[in-house]
Image 1 (cartoon, helix red, strand yellow):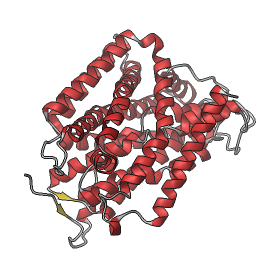
Image 2 (cartoon, rainbow, N blue to C red):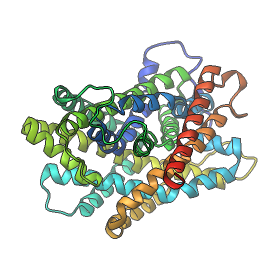
Image 3 (cartoon, rainbow, N blue to C red):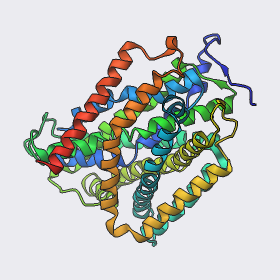
Image 4 (cartoon, one colour):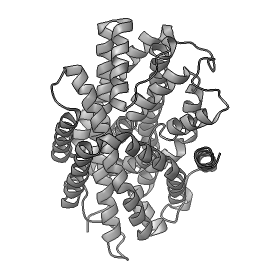
Length: 435
């Protein structure tokens, strides 16, 4: 049996331990800053000006503990949330989780890939169909993540994060003077207290800063970093790494709202349907309004955002399915998992299976793609309270020593997030199916 990782908690405090911890939080940001930002946040700005910005930032703030429980659990136990689910709730919960997630993951990969392909085609004037470009991107992303492992993914993601941050901030500054800074503009797509605004809020807030499954991916990346380094980061170092990624995702969400408000809402332009058409429309509007340079900047920003998301999910989703498979198939009574995730046969099968299913969707179901995406978004949102509750009770479960469990403040904060997600879900169901 492998020797357990040594804990860094007893190590002498030096800044180097914080630098060594950096990585999973950046991957969190790379995965979170995707369609939810480029499309959803920008569309919110285009339709409502900055009217929904406060709600978006409030939602990100409220959901903080739900996402933080991922790296927190690894810092205390050395294991991922998937293993935490097994120890807290049993194999059947892990199996049900994997079964529900599997089809959604393939659709999400297809959606991210087709949006990235559309931006690549616009930027490079490629004479290929969007599904063909998306297939090339998926294939290249799989090769990179499988052969390079966590180290390569971490390095590439950090480079892309720097590029997308700089270009997004520059594009935001360019749009800033055109923004109507009214708290809730009279020109908003619908009144604040209306069913239409509630549906929009649910669609935007449900995936801000991302789907809650990203907490699980974060825990898996933290586990991979620990195995690469040969020691476990303590909670303080994990928190700093996570906070950088989480705050960064929040700031860039605000940036994309401002971009939509400045370039589209100020001119009364109706957003195009579909992620690809909308993203291309934003690039074109920057070019026509502020000049060629701005179109290039926002194009690079949007493309880099989507490419980082594609790379992180191509690694994270198979990693999550492999961890779930290991948790389900490990015999009862054996607490330590000796099988590795990264580079394993199960990881390769999961990566190929999800990628091939995503490519199949791209070439056969594009006519109903918006319907599929609506299904995924609504499903992810309605599952959010359940996942938030699983994370809360896992972080406070028997696998975590009593003295190391979250503070009363974090737990109260987490319960507030769960209650908020439940109320929003019930409100959405009422408006869509009863009202």
